[in-house]
Image (cartoon, rainbow, N blue to C red; front, side, top):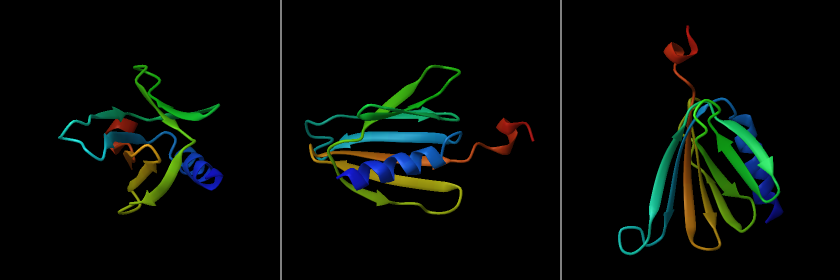
Length: 109
């Protein structure tokens, strides 16, 4: 279990400054479950006791991920500029995170 936490922290720290799409859902979404999606531009990663926070400094938007109770992490990366993970927790929740490089126009190039 600790290996999953370390893997998640390492992966997210390597992606700091990129754009994050995060989708939380449970296995029964659409029936009685719930989900949410959030978009964070140029995410800043904060590691705290028991969780990782990905925040957007300009707007204050954020999402938090627990680092305990992770059952499985699947790497769903599709290329150098489209990184993705699915994190499955023991409580049947699943979080899909897709990470994109900020566009050149946004960087001012």
